[in-house]
Amino acid sequence: MKHIITLFFALIFASCTDTLIGDEGRQDEDIYLNYRTKTDLELPFEGDWRISAGGRTHLEGAHHFITRGSGQRYAYDIFKVVDGNGNSGNGSENEDSYTFGARLNAPGDGVIISLENGIEDNLRPGTKNIQQGSAAGNYIMIDHLNGEYSLLAHFKKGSIIVSVGDVVIQGQEIGKAGNSGNSTGPHLHYHLQNTPDLLDGIGLPAQFKNYYADDVFVGNSEPVRDEIVRKD
Image (cartoon, rainbow, N blue to C red; front, side, top):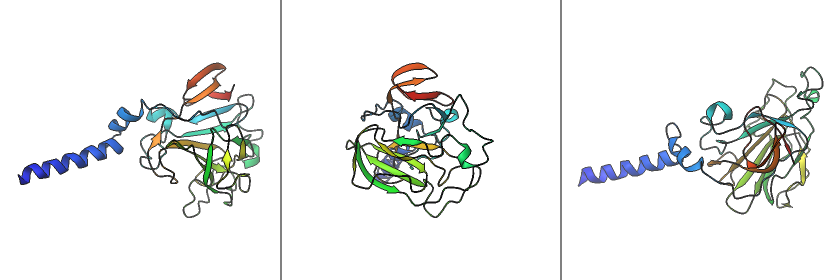
């Protein structure tokens, strides 16, 4: 009986561990690769942006296997481009980047449940000044009221124009892109997760509606690394 009880608890522990994280994320894949986003999401920016990290594979995603438990498993890193270029200058200053100060919007309807707006931007691309607990830099967390939560991170200091408790609608401006927190240059970090807690929980695949990827219309899908995307 003792051996049976021991085996039972061992199986329960292994099952929970594999289901939630897994040594190589195999059980995560079984569950979440087929996950269908509940929230009606649209790309949270204007104009053309390039996906520098994003997709279902480790190669595409960058966050794929290294951020289990922080909600970032299917996260996107995205930067704005004009005529295919990310910078108007040589890229040595934040202001050279088309992303720095670019408008960011709510990707879907919801309620602002947490944010940070006072963290200094990193002085320039390639430098980091990460304050304690500020890896996301200036950020906004949106509760979509259906068990899904959007995190948008690395806003420009002082640019966020919404407050905790505000109801936002899809496409509403919420702030400006920046280079705060754990960021090597101006960009938007976006991910969908299953908890309201910052950088905690299970990352969820995020399908966006009605956008163009490399000038091809997409009705409902997930952008992947190196695509240039824009809202319809």
